[in-house]
Amino acid sequence: MLYWIFKHLIIGPFLKTVYRPWVEGAENIPASGPVIIVGNHLSVIDSFFMPLMIDRRVYFLAKSDYFTGRGIKGRLVKSFMLAVGQLPIDRSGGKASEASLNTGLGVLDRGDVLGIYPEGTRSPDAQLYRGRTGVARLVLESGALVVPAVMIDTEKAMPIGAKFPKVRRIGTVIGKPLDFSRFAGMSADRFVLRSVTDEIMLEIQRLSGQQYDDVYASSVRSRA
Image 1 (tube, rainbow, N blue to C red):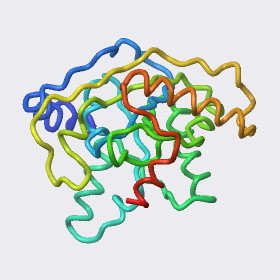
Image 2 (cartoon, rainbow, N blue to C red):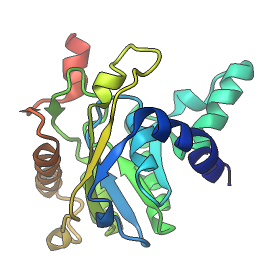
Image 3 (spheres, rainbow, N blue to C red):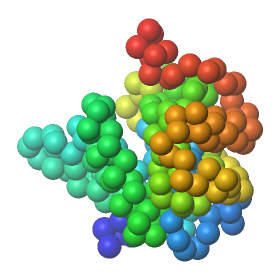
């Protein structure tokens, strides 16, 4: 209920009026059933504008720091993140990664829509970077439909480090579903996981037109 109020009565109308977002390919999102939306990650506002252009509720896995703040501010941030469909996960690796996978599978088992950024973090320079294979595990273990959706110009509206987004038009391009049924039952094969992930990244690159660099975005950010 809170999500519906934010999307249709509070945040949604404001963002649509001010930023006039556009979308192509919205018909590629099925009306029901489990769906994994895979996309590029240019800005923190990606997770607000992309769901705005899709009729169904989209859940994202967000770092747990957003949900553990103290005081009034911490409670407000937590309430807001939950209201807009963010689910807390631990990104420290190891068993935490397995727990994150299970959280995502839980969303899909309910027949809902899960949004994932295969790069694992925001791009530091608007290029597209190597995808992490956790997305492939989710795809193969859930059997959910995979739909690529890319954001256009969100990094220009709100680059890394900015406190507030600039007013400019933002786009979402949604591609046709990807079929990975040929890899069913092979989620334990690391070569298959890499192949599926690379195929996803290739389609994201095709839709977004970004330059691709076959290294992890987190490595580039740490060097910077």
